[in-house]
Length: 122
Image (cartoon, rainbow, N blue to C red; front, side, top):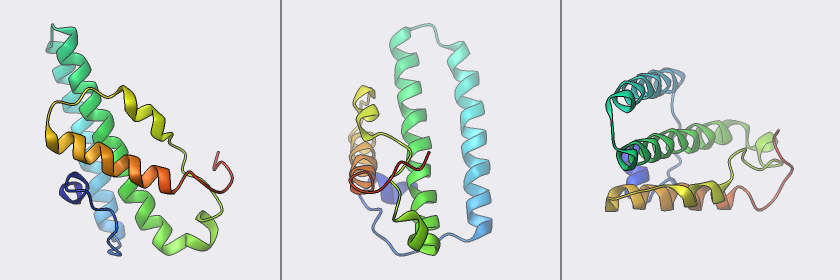
């Protein structure tokens, strides 16, 4: 799924199973633990910013995947609301690879499409 985001695709109608959602949650939790460990070991501020940017991109990518899956089942309810994330917050990311930039653009496109209408969800 993350590869699809990096390649610019969140348009699939494929829905995650409950087991796949739990697996993604576990992967994200573990990823964030590793990021925290690496962050403490880094000495250069630039490296810390890059690491934090990648972490945010991964977490927001997973949000989009989870939101898309949930929306496939509960669109009658969720379509009345905007997503909780603000696309403009992505402008602060520090990304150095084409893959990361493509993923950020895909996330931004997904958030923009779901931020134009509806009530705030929170």
